[in-house]
Image 1 (cartoon, rainbow, N blue to C red):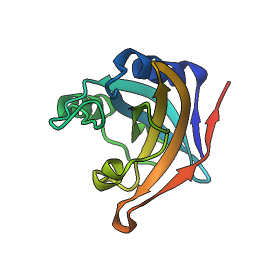
Image 2 (image 1 turned 90 degrees about the horizontal axis):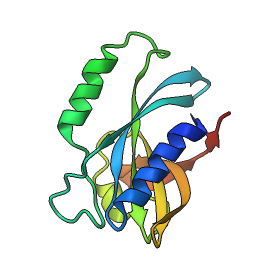
Image 3 (image 1 turned 135 degrees about the vertical axis):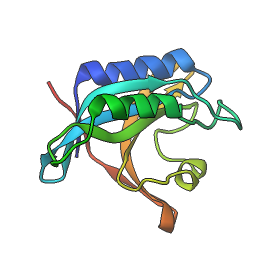
Image 4 (image 1 turned 180 degrees about the horizontal axis):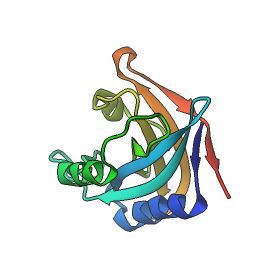
Length: 146
């Protein structure tokens, strides 16, 4: 299960609406809370550097990722804060991984948060693990915390 505060989720949905009709993207930092649950502790936005088409693909700026990694430092335990995933939006498409998303998933442990945006308004956000080798995705529970 992925746990995220309403304030952090709002940062993602606001970014998705602001980027519309393009895709927004960014990174999620957090920590494992035990029992397989992940708590998102921060959202780091990125410019979409997709070289193909920012309307239906995304690429997180490597400088943003490296800066976040430096800020987080190294981690020696499961409870330390680290990059746990990324987020992006799907303008006028469902909040589920596309074929392009699955093909571009190189880190199977990272969570994918996808926000659907219809006519400029965020309508749904879902969480997934991408099983690239099998060409599938697995939806995981997303819980909004207090």
